[in-house]
Image (cartoon, rainbow, N blue to C red; front, side, top):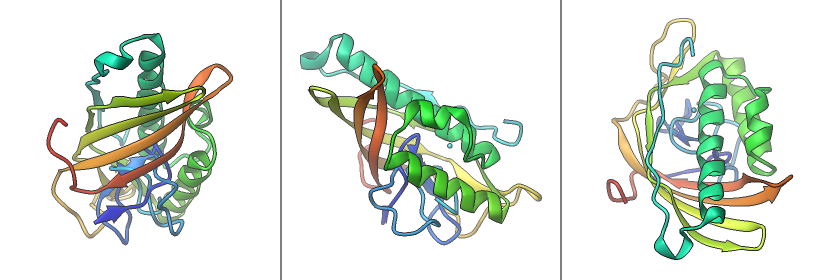
Length: 201
């Protein structure tokens, strides 16, 4: 199923009403409601002490883009995921890492999901492995495609129990748009398709 998420670092997420995968953040474009998430591992409303996940980031830069710009884009993409997961671990929509790695509409969507998670007492935990590749850089806009492996899940903070329905770990396709803001690449939009990419691609 296609997962709509607020951006990056949505980043992946699963909502209380949708599968577990959610994106950091990251998938605003497809978000139809505050309950939808951005990317795999996102929250039931939208990636510590309660967040035991450690995102593994293995990146690949196409030979045509093997330069400082591509490396900077990937750095921004990975940073957004990391910020999303940290914020999700505490359902904190005010985590400063979000605004330093994302811009609207991704930022707005991710925050909305986190607010919903916070109100429902939901947090995220579990690792996500990234395999990002820069496919294009044009001026101050870049596109990154990824096939993430997510075992991230949403749980109730008070009990640690999974938020139903739960799904097994899966590979999720991600297409992220980044823009330069203040000299830094930030995620502006992100779309995630659950279970729709080849492992490691």
